[in-house]
Amino acid sequence: MSLNTDWLAAVTFDSNGLIPAIAQDAKSDAILMVAWMNAEALSETVQSGRAVYWSRSRARLWRKGEESGHVQTVSEIRLDCDGDVILLKVEQQGGIACHTGRESCFFRRLDGHANDARWTITDPVLKDPKLIYK
Image 1 (cartoon, rainbow, N blue to C red):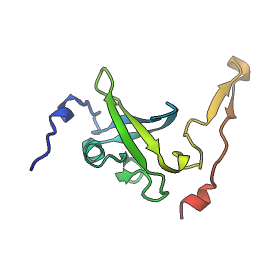
Image 2 (spheres, one colour; image 1 turned 30 degrees about the vertical axis):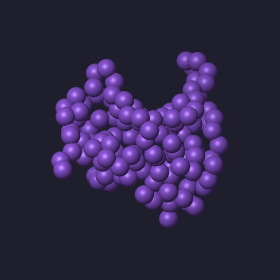
Image 3 (cartoon, one colour; image 1 turned 90 degrees about the horizontal axis):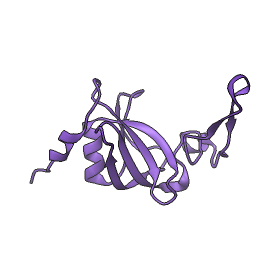
Image 4 (tube, rainbow, N blue to C red; image 1 turned 45 degrees about the vertical axis):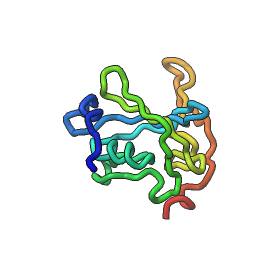
């Protein structure tokens, strides 16, 4: 039995064959992280129901949670109006999406204005990354 991949034709990948993918918590709507997907990662995500990304640094598929155990179970996939950004609504296992041990990769907020602007860390480390990645 072959899988229907007609839906993949609506997805616009960049010149490197990648598309940005935003992972959003399905319950809280918090933005957890942004990663990249290629057609293989997106197809595997659809098939398995688990988030699979393309790791640009490792140049291979990255099955979220393969090392940390912080798997993302996908409940919904959306494509933006231009077909060039994916939104994954996920259940984040362990409550940690970031490799820094935080819930979200977006833990820095720009405070102040112009000449006194600075980044403020807003979210705590929930687990020491040395205990997550061995």
